[in-house]
Image 1 (cartoon, rainbow, N blue to C red):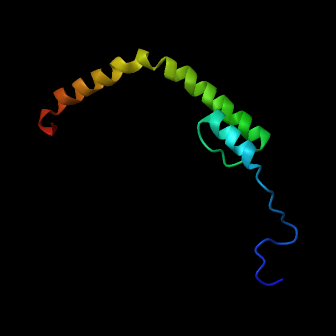
Image 2 (tube, rainbow, N blue to C red):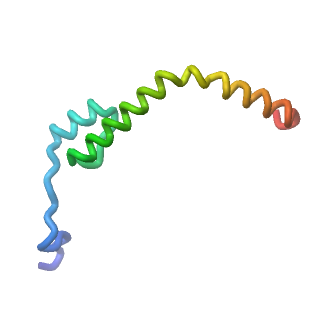
Image 3 (cartoon, rainbow, N blue to C red):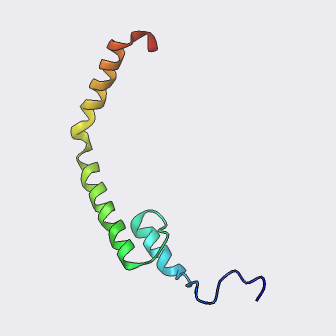
Length: 78
């Protein structure tokens, strides 16, 4: 079987494009797999990101303080 790129013991699975489109709409990005465990992990990551993004305003003052401190320590850099 010359020219065959998949060995006999390896089987390439077909991707369900409709399911992939649904997951892309849900997750906000195209996942590399439709495996249930991977999708659940992505959902948890998105849930955690949403949680912390909703609270990010609490830390906004820190970036401003850091910038002021940097400018005071090295005024020639600006």
